[in-house]
Length: 415
Ligand code: ATP
Ligand code: MG
Image 1 (tube, rainbow, N blue to C red):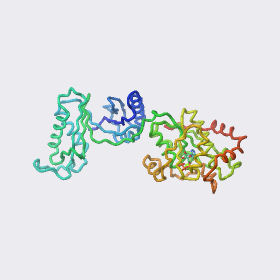
Image 2 (cartoon, rainbow, N blue to C red):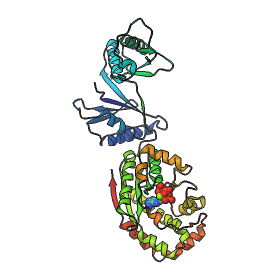
Image 3 (spheres, rainbow, N blue to C red):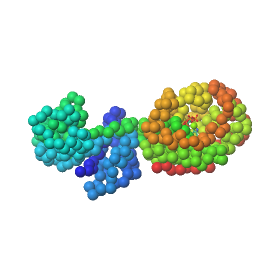
Image 4 (spheres, rainbow, N blue to C red):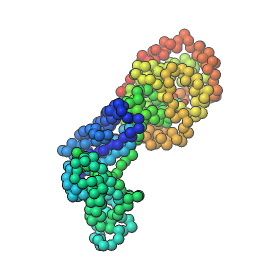
């Protein structure tokens, strides 16, 4: 018996009234997108505050674990259940299906696995599975009340697995849900979803994506709030290698597993970096470079229809992320800059990157464009007026260089 239905639960907060339909449509679209990478034929439907995924009856190619894995990356979902869906039958039929469901779903639990005959009169064994049945009767025409179905199914389970199951209404190991709707849905395990909001319900933002640990996590966090992403990466060939670029493409792919498609703009930053290196005080290199990164990323944000920028900065992590440095960087952007990691310790960020699967790629040792032109003693408390004055030394060339960097950038579509 293969369960061909997945029940998807989502949070209700903030989706009252008119927003609800939009929220559900966006969520269904993201579910379809996530499943487009999984082998199998899936139908995604919305019904009465629920989203269901049904696998075509004749389709045997699908792997339920792969489906579950893909669904646990869809923002907006709070729970995912594999469901046994059966036609509405009489109560005896429902009880029989519930027994079948338990036998299959918990076949690996020691108590059920044990095929030794049991004395029906003996008390429940210590490792018996405790359970509670919870029936919901959305179809009010059904001839039996929810509580009567609970009682009947409970009784049948005790009979079917004598000594191996016991009732516990307070802290059951297994909550068995039975929903009587147009059809009967039987399920028990609710796998937590990632939470958040469906991507596409909160606009679009431009992520400054480097090859480090932080920026992919920052992008993931903003996408989790329902924001679609595009990204800009600055490299400095020949000072940075093709492998460094590939690493960023790989990171964008990992983030896109959650966020959906990303336009990745790869900007050749070499000439601008060399010009800064040539003309500006070396202890200000990183700050000035960061300011031009903001300006270029903002131009792509405009082109892509974004309303904000995202960086992986966190207060005090390095010299270029002191409050004074952030003030200088911020000044270069006119759009809001989202810095979701601002108050995170490095270890918190590492933990998140492990959880979302970007860590192993992030720690591959390839040069980032910033590490090549860094000063030995960068300013930690830059003053905006001084930084602006230093930038003045580039005034004859910089506008044209920025335009050229944007015009010559390569755009890669990450799906
Ligand atoms: P990360 O791990 O994200 O690289 P980091 O700790 O190395 O961060 P910095 O190198 O100071 O920190 O970079 C701060 C932020 O600036 C990054 O999180 C990223 O958003 C942006 N950034 C830095 N370098 C680049 C780059 N080469 N291309 C695009 N964005 C960059
Ligand atoms: Mg970095």
